[in-house]
Amino acid sequence: AMIEIGFLLLGFGVSLYIAQQAAIRRYRRQGFIAFLPWALVFLLMMLVSLWIMGMPMEMRGTEAFFA
View 1 (cartoon, rainbow, N blue to C red):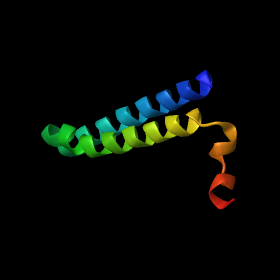
View 2: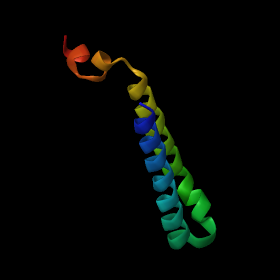
View 3: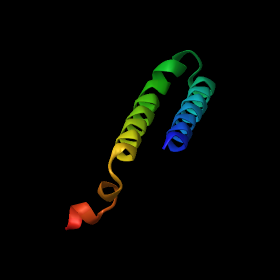
View 4: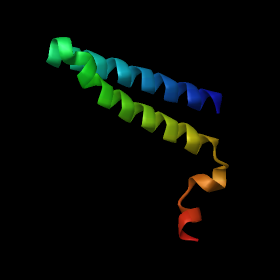
């Protein structure tokens, strides 16, 4: 589980870096403001991913929703 969490954190960090660089390149001085909505989306995705990873294995599938 620690390796999976590590890869999630790595992907989160890389996503933030790429979005920040793209926002700065596109918007110059307002780059940080343009970056904030994407950072929020990435943070929400990260939190949901960690929440799903913390669930017991049988809760991760769709079986629980259609039973």
